[in-house]
Image (cartoon, rainbow, N blue to C red; front, side, top):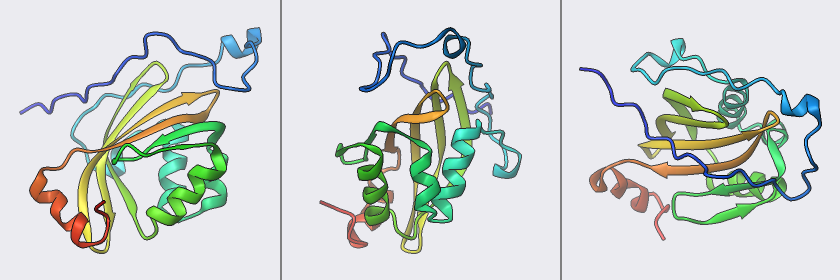
Length: 166
């Protein structure tokens, strides 16, 4: 059975982020992100684009300093409950508060232009839940991260019991 490829939403027009200047010719010719197929593999054999691999490593080690360096200064994080967090420092503070003790176990990745979709497990001592991370990468930095839980309602119930519900 062939696993289905995660759906990646295309952005119709890419608007510049606040503070971005017109790209120089060198920036316009920036190498595209490495493209990998979305296939069912063991996480050890999964090839991830460098910014995503660095994000997972820093997140799993709770290395907030290096995690912050991966985000664009005007980045936006959209959390599973549709909370939007804007700005590098605010994102790091949010992750420090809401994701303490959590880790990411990647399972599949798909890359389309500047959008990287990572599927896997969000894990903490109290629960594991299937999730999908949608990254927009601009000049090697995370400009937008949208985290979506893709678990069933039954899988999400332990989240509420663990204090993650509204």
